[in-house]
Image (tube, rainbow, N blue to C red; front, side, top):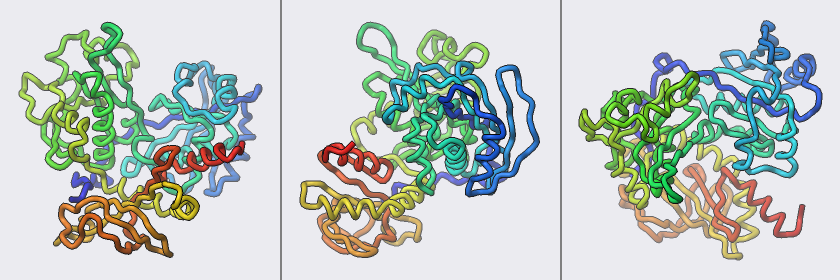
Length: 438
């Protein structure tokens, strides 16, 4: 069966207005960048940039300037401010740093702010452009701080993100925070929520009343729901919507969903009060589809438990399926090179192909995994690893040739881990280290 979502896409003129997307480039040099220095840099971008009107700044901002980028409908605002005004080092330990990046970022005294509005019909492409703009401003900057998701991107990750023409996957646009109870050494309860979705024209998502051992499954559900909602119509409050085959949930505004909860519960009213609190505003709580009016906050535990037990799969948006296919094809040459080198070394090479279901329309596809045995120009000879649900002409274990035009994903299972088009660069790094390289 197809794993693509059937949520209706929102017409461009009906998409909610997003919040600004704000990121900061770490400037590790002693003196702040001069406006003229930045002006000359952006004029050298591949896509022409034209100066917009000069903007005034507050006491903490040295200067600010707006720029217009080709194919981006709104200006990009750039400014300089002291680093201590924005970000501390609290999140540095959770970052996968490249050599020397952490030390440079921690020593940075200045930040270059880069802010714009994302296109709500295609926020991932807009965010990709924003990060490419940052990389072009200073390609050797040690890090970029995303103030919307509270995520620090090391410079090497920014390089990887911007080296491809394909936008990043949905979960790069937001982060998931898990707050656990502190009763005793072993937490029993978890409040899981997102930061960063508002800038895509979507509400932030919360799950309350989740047991600590289900945090990973709950995070998977948040990722899946976020992917389905971006660029789609938001269902009505309380209305059930499918997130997977036979798996439905609903949502409620957080103000309504917590009325039956004690104020002091994790994610309750006490956690959402105060000026500038990021846990209020445009935010919803995911609930069970059959919650009664007096139980608006009931978590969708049935769906979370099914995810935890790996019983069924979540739908994937058509946008994400197409994005994955583009990236898989763009980086196919790396898969092919590694296949030639390591096909006899115990590595497993897998491809995911989309085939039209029996009696279906061209875009109604079932996505199937195959183990690659041979590679030829524009096709692979591979064994089907799972039994199709709605394609009678194909059977598990069949070995046949498959055109690459059907490719939607691939991965490689190696002694160093599993690698995909999203992270294949790490495999090259690991291979170099095993070979004794730097």
